[in-house]
Image: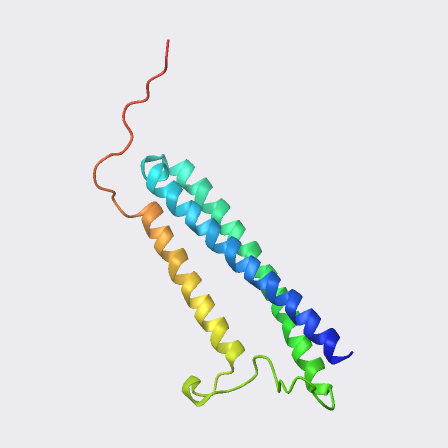
Length: 145
């Protein structure tokens, strides 16, 4: 595999990672809006259904990210097998800067992303099932005769 092919694959994979990240945050943002506008006053069955759908969506995005990580690591291995690099890029994410205390950039990104999504998920579970929202936003339902 040539340097150009590896860089092309990396570019495509990076675009997919950005898309997965964007879709994940879009799902979370839509859930927050739905929670604020509708779900906070919804019966438990509807909140449970909505939270289950969010869980499945985020699990799918997590599985997709896991697969992309394997592909990214594969391109890193292919890159390391090249004898010379015309672009003078030594590696993509395997550097271990001292301020990460022995972690590579890949490992730090996984910890940061996993921690952030985990905290958001737990917070949404709390807001969906435990938190008592003050006041009411929905008036009585009126059906036109």
